[in-house]
Image (cartoon, rainbow, N blue to C red; front, side):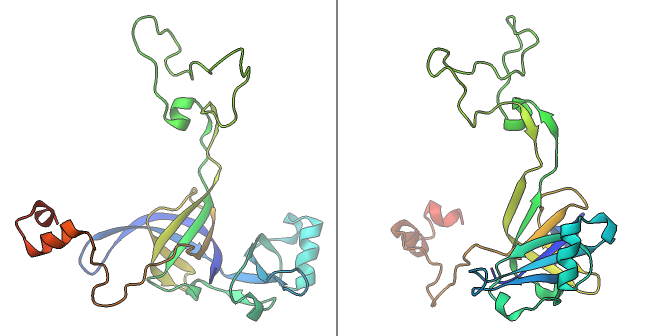
Length: 242
């Protein structure tokens, strides 16, 4: 990946573009992050940097964590995360990464921990159907129902949609647009929703999606013969539905 930063989800709001259209956005307090460790190909076998985020009192860290940060000489930070960046070899311990590492118009992937919903049934957790409300359904309308064969295989296969702990999963939303960046407020505004509650920790990274590149004057024109004929004959239904 090219760039990355650690931040917190502030919440959602909406802004207006130049055309007056409403854009739903998520505000992220991103950074400043400090490089707490540098890994090299010669020593660790790969190139990466470890970023630290959010200053914290030393007494709130374990002794191994505090010792690791003291050795780096960067102060006490609460959150540590390693990123394999393309320019990791050029970075050094102590470097500070701010929100302006990203620019307006860039595409990013945002990773966070989804909201927790506690113990949930199969209907809420997986969207399964309820049983009929008539003809003796009794108090089991929202139960999971039959679990399958009894003699063979005499067990429940892994991955079956069953009640259990819902949420608190790592979720990544890809290919989001950066709408605005404010380095003074350490703020990145991203179009759309990102996982997690308000105040939840998020990782903002350059998108892993490959952006298509249009080449030549005929870029984006379909080779479908039906669409080609629609361009010639505007009376065709495929031309009217554009």
